[in-house]
Length: 103
Image (tube, rainbow, N blue to C red):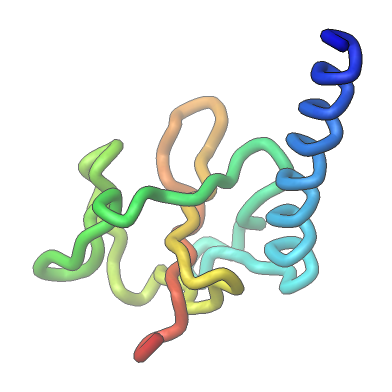
């Protein structure tokens, strides 16, 4: 029984990673300013609802206290959530993907 549960969790976890990896990579998203690719399957994750908030000049990422300028926001989230892609070495936000405006 334990072996079955472990195998099931591995498959479920990989399917979630592939699902997000699929739409972000399928859109070939890049930072609009730097041109850097947004993500692969390990450096992007959904942000909690209170994890991003609009402030003067852009949107603040609560986890890092970074203000991402409006011009760097990608309004293309396919699931209506905020997604943050980060630099794995510095933890700086590489791309911030928001739900389409008005959704």
